Length: 167
Image (cartoon, rainbow, N blue to C red; front, top):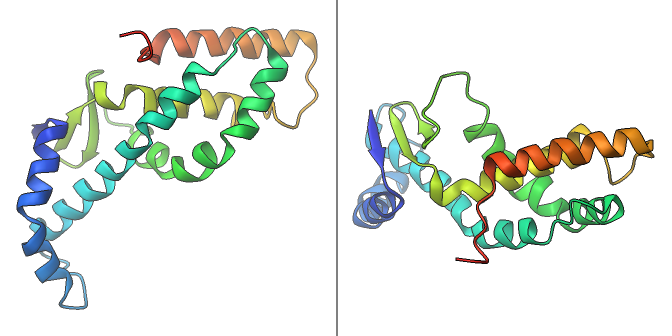
């Protein structure tokens, strides 16, 4: 098991880029080459970090006390939540294996610190709750249902959100 910092992953990818490109140039992926697949997994994972700032902004714009604004928020962030981050959620958030609350499992035996990705994870949880689970962008909900959605949202934010706008 390897616990990697974000900086370790970036450095390793840079240091090993040429070897990876050499293997990739062969046309077919080398199925039995652990280096090749490790590089692939780390590279795919690190690409999601580019969404951090958009997630930070999106979370800071949430108005949890205004249901109409929540509906508008899901429409505004629909591409980010339903397309850009969809595979992040599938690949890194839905593990049956018990993983420390301070880590994210990248792949078998590869873990990284959770904190740099905290608001990406939070954004995914919030978006999942509002968009997929409750369809606030299209559903007509009763006042009681709206209150439940907001109460659950507050719990999600309390659990996951790190305010990066007021450091």
